[in-house]
Length: 351
Length: 289
Image 1 (cartoon, one colour):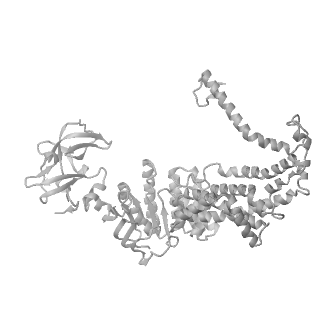
Image 2 (image 1 turned 90 degrees about the vertical axis):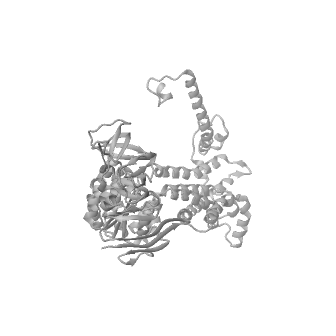
Image 3 (image 1 turned 180 degrees about the vertical axis):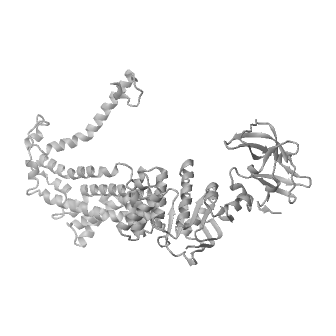
């Protein structure tokens, strides 16, 4: 049972302020994902939970107990590093056993726990190998096994899948999700990959520039983004964000294009719409008419992209459709699934 | 014939006449170079097993009846190389045993910790190597005389430590720098204290570097001449000093000197053979992606 609370966490490296007044409570057994681009402070924040970094200001607490002064060794956390951090001079079994060895657990008991952990990640036949003899996916599983061999209070994972190839990533993702559910331990997971965030998290904290932009369940982040950054970060392909001038008569986009939609308020706005919420239809009653810039076949669907001023707008279309560059198409938005943002601040305008 | 010239070339590749002659000229140059380096050593080795007459004779340069007489003579009076071998081992061994832990800990501190004047202190440590031995010999002599430590092996160990430590620290620091921080952080998260991290994780991973530094330190101390000469008198004489004894009023006793030379270099060869295994393969491969 571990609730993690971060209160007013601030971290600076010299003059650079990496994490800015961060406040967050992670519930017991929750799988929380820190999602954001490089340099947003997500890894730094997680390292402060581990104790590998110390906050410049603010408190880290486990179950209400302040952990700032507690050294990493005694925090009872387990961590999977991006580059695995395996001990090169020890075999797989010795790597996995190390946390137990440090706690003085007897050899017989140690071997049993190691075997159990290894089986969980399907590493049974590899116990005697050395890390340099293993593939990337296998090394990652050793790192995982080492983190689960004893049951810690908190799991921390720092982009564990980023060094795996795409196919392996999908498999490993499923394994991690299964493992986390099985072990029922509070987990913090750091990634820049929004697919991982969507599939693994109970809640996602989207971070940018040291600040949490939005905290919520994946579906809420996806369907109800708090600002244009979150909207543009989640989803693949990214949400279309089109700068428009909202007037009484309709919307004026760059390049003089008229869009036949009504905005909630006048002024400079960003119109957000997901590719899958738009469709191609007849030209006459289309909200927007434009020429095809590129047309891509994705297998399960196709994607038509048009250029509006400087912005590319993508629309998903049925997989059997074929279009040529330059063809005139009519884009239909779904009025129920439009997102409006203030062009200057990026803040979401809710009506 | 063709395969010997260009192993990477496609089969059936025939080098031109120019390419062939260039190749042979290169081979010859290599042979000349290697001979220049190895022949003197081979010569000394052979001389150690020659009778005094054979040493000076050209006809017996390569074909002679070998004798073990020299190797036996050098252990007797007045040369007593046995005693000097013991001293050399004691001093070199003692220096290495003391220097390695000290250098490793210093190297770790320089590599992992941040403290005031770190850069400057490190520079001073390295730069101390540039002080010529002749400059500090007299101060050392006076210092040991005051302390009543002249002609002791302890004094020699202390002097050699000051010679060897800067290089050892610098070299081991390089190897510790190469150990990824993630490995240490993993160990810390797993629950290891800093001491355990160093002893169980960093040292084994940086071991090739530590062994290299150890071998270098041993060699440096083993061959050290100037301080051994100044500080040693009767009890703390090492092998290099022992070699001087073969320059007598009768002339240079080459065959005995060569025997002494063989005794001096033999341990070096053995150590090198033993240590080679440590450098096969890369130790940190596989620990991080």
